[in-house]
Length: 158
Image (cartoon, rainbow, N blue to C red; front, side, top):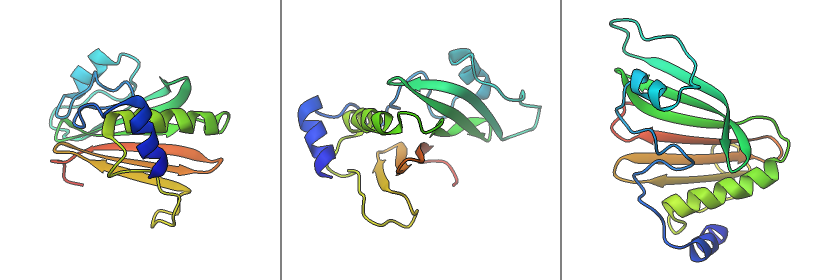
C-alpha cells in the first residue's frame, strides 16, 4: 500500500480506471474476436464457428516495459470478457515486477488497491486488486515464480 501511494505521488494521478492498462488500450470490452485480431494481428487461435459463443485467443511474447508475457483473450457470448497476462520465464522477473506495478498504479491508482505481501487466500507473495465501473483488475505474483494480471469486464458472468 505504501509503495502504491508513493508511486502515485511520483507518477501523478491515475488515468481513467475504466481504460485497459499495459498497452491493451487497443482493446475494449464487448469487442468481437474478429475485431481483436484486426487490432492485434499476432493473436493466435481457432476461428469462431457459427453458433459458437465462446472463444480464446493467445499471443506469446507480448511486451510490457521490456518484459515478456503470454496474452490471453477470453470471449464469452462472442464478446471480449477477460484478458489475462502471464509472465514468461523467471529471467528479470524482479525488474519486470517493479515496472508492471508502476504502470498499474499509474493507471488505476494506489489508494484503494495497493500491493499486499500479507497472507492472502491465493497463496501468492503479493496480491492487489482494483475495481471500476466496467473493469476488475487483479495482480498476483509469486516471488521468483511468475506475475499474473487479469482484467475482467464487470458485466461478465464469472
